[in-house]
Length: 194
Image 1 (cartoon, rainbow, N blue to C red):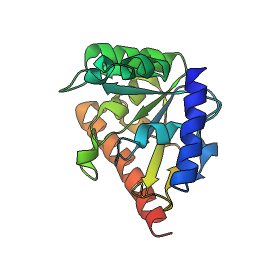
Image 2: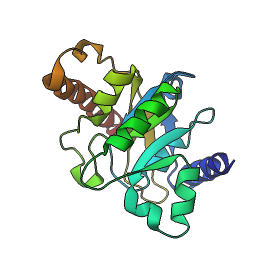
Image 3: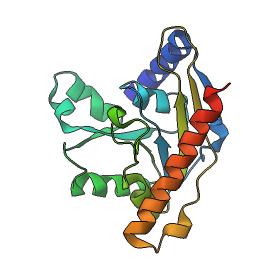
Image 4: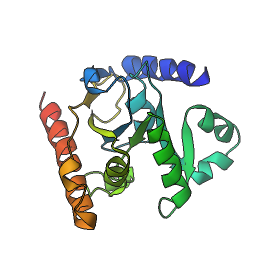
């Protein structure tokens, strides 16, 4: 109940304050495991990425320290966030992610890792989870800079097929990650010019 309420509030705020335009929502499967992969430019990105999706919940990893903050630590689990330790993704986080995907959920991931790495190399976690779970990888482009009353665009693209890299080991993970990141960057570039 809290998730649905907060999702609706965030979506209203994004549409009102940042004139959010959403493109390609039909690319998100109505069932089955999904990994949403997006570029990362702000702390607002997680709620922005999931707020237009009405019929399914989006789960996120969040820094473990945030769960120790009063009120926020209570809210986060109720909006489908789960903790990840600083300095890398723990085995426990990976196990939980795979379990969520096995249960046909959506996980939102920012392969750049942090907003300070915007435009940098992607981390291999999203590709690894997708190949292990068979999840559909949906690329998403966040276009704009969260300036009040200036247009923000959120684009969900057609799924990226990385199955060709399933048997290619570590090098395959890098190639799969590069393919996902190249798709996202292409989408950003395309919609920045509109």
